[in-house]
Image (cartoon, rainbow, N blue to C red; front, side):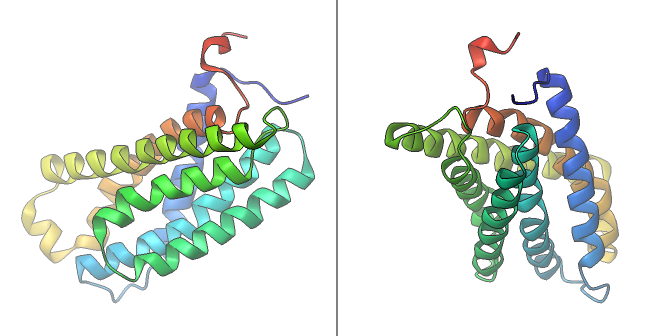
Length: 198
């Protein structure tokens, strides 16, 4: 029997996962990196390695399955490793939007729920996961830019970019992650949107 939570509780779980993953990823970026582009690439690499397995683990936990938890960590780690390599190209649109869509698609397609079986379900999960990943990527990109552009002086971004990313990136990732967990739960087949009240 799977664990069931209302969407607001899933969103809170997503906020927690996003906060922890972003915080750890930011702490793992070497302190000497002052260039904003280099910092963002290294942050994205570490975030992919931490966040994606965490979501895979969470999906297994929702299904009360240790086997699915282990599979989620392995699949998430593999996708995070691929993301690590892709980030080296320094294509920031792909880093912030394109690859999160692939991460969502990969997680949903490969970690389908115990209710979602067969080839047709696989294809459906893939497309739903791509959409969930797009929500993650676009929400993070929009919120990060909105926060940095409205709350952080330009001079601070030039002189103390890594420090200012805590102010913009942490809340942006938390909110985007809350949305993503709601969407990925639907994408893997753990809940139907119309039946969410139950």
